[in-house]
Image (cartoon, rainbow, N blue to C red):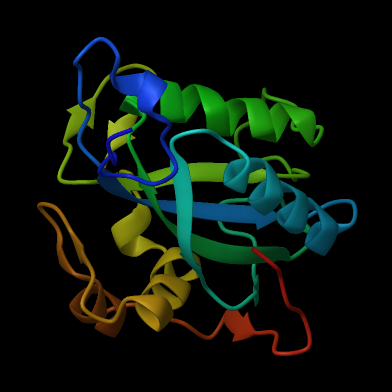
Length: 187
């Protein structure tokens, strides 16, 4: 039995001789209705159970003001997840949308409160602009609820075609992003 480049992938994946690159991915998870912490924990568990996805690191939990939401929208709990994956971007997107659906995410009004929101922020150096997905995420560079937790776990992070997360953060108001040291997630 030969060893594969990614220990989470069984040898059967390589019977065709096809090897897929391991790509680092950055995902943003948020919840602002229901049991917010349980929604985030369940999403982490579902992602960790996904073949060809390995969670590398998860930020602290942050409570954040809802952005571009209707007046009176509840605050979010947010985390950033660093993962390695050999899934194609399309399959990774399908998986995160399936996880959202499993946790009661209703699609429609894109700014409505939600049980779970999982966004692909960056997948390797991949640049994409399709009807289904834009990479890097088109608003990540202007959202403190993404950049603050990302910077916490990867201070040298960069967004392709946008720059260093640390530099982008310097231009943002981070007052609506508060670390919740009393809340923890397992992964």
